[in-house]
Image 1 (cartoon, helix red, strand yellow):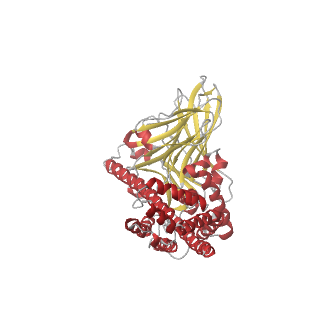
Image 2 (tube, rainbow, N blue to C red; image 1 turned 90 degrees about the horizontal axis):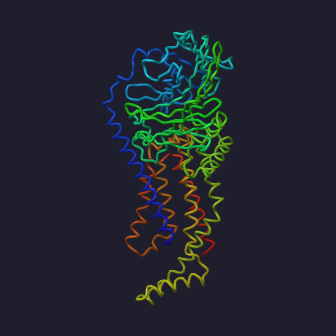
Image 3 (tube, rainbow, N blue to C red; image 1 turned 45 degrees about the horizontal axis):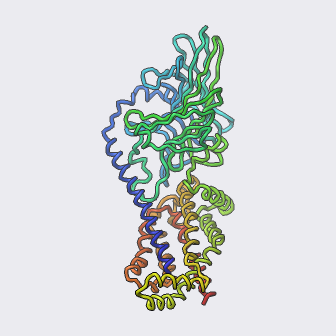
Length: 530
């Protein structure tokens, strides 16, 4: 019983730490939002912001500013903004209080872009709206600009059906007698502080997923870079022959993937004005000979973090689905959950089935745990006698108890280690459930319409608390003699219930089923020992 009590106390402290971290994050986010409320919109040139064309296929809709050809708005047409909403999810945005853009251009000696509103080229297009039709295999949208020397720059956006990756090509037609030199630059910039309307964690104290910049290079398959580091001007400067740069948030990502080039790309971060962070890449110098054409290619991902699709777009891009330090457990668990979902067709029942599978796999550990607990409980009278006999010699008490355990062939850690080993499984499932876009707005049954968010009526947390109470009763909490510890044991189910009120419904469902299976296993194991 000592082991069971220690585990619950350990779990309580651990969950308290998670909640404290989330609370600190909430305060930090709130303070930053308050600091940002006085932002004016002078950095948004209204005239230039209205020079837009719309490009869409069946899954994304992009608004491109003709001044520079940046993607300033992006809607994900198959993902809803909120549960039961008719509005599509808006990933990229340009408003007075929030900026999230995917920029690209040609910089350097002869590049037309300087990435400010006064010197960027004004492209022209044949019309204002372009849509990929059902019978088309791809949509090519060229926009053009000719400089004063007669050099023609054509920027082309290429979309394909049901694809979130967009090909971006630059064709430079050098009709002059001079050689041109330039670099391609791809950049993603975002306001560091989220406005309230975009803060999906508002009022939710569950552990948050990563939001910030990330990159992949020749030396690092995947590296996160926090907004906090960028805001303090601790900026990146990485040389690489391959890789990508990205901005990440829960479920969704925007990433630039440079095209093949001779030489090294430069990955960088920058702290821009008005609390905006940027991550980007700059290609090596590109030479365009006189009276010749040159084609520069790149690609951008704007969409949900679907692992199987992202890994086809660029190596290691699927790692943006960040499962934390337990990724080696979360990834196979997600593959198993996906496999079960293909058979069952409901993510909730898939979570139930995966819980049964995990409990079956860990049954030998569970059996070892409860057998050890039962044996230690049966030794309590003898341990009490030893304490009474040698009550003035603590060292002798410890020695005698160790001898008793040795004679009875009991490992005092036998009940704790199996539980400790199962903790990573719980955490890996947690990260898997809150990071997988497939579970976003996924219904279960009855009142549970979104497994990725909290139970709106708090029914599942209440059931979870009841199962914890039953587990304690079966484990004979009444055998605890210390009054203070006994009170703690009685309060732990209540405290856990309160904590779980804000946890994703899918995770609470997992914990309920896990507790129900534990109750059955406890009764079965204890019946065999009696």
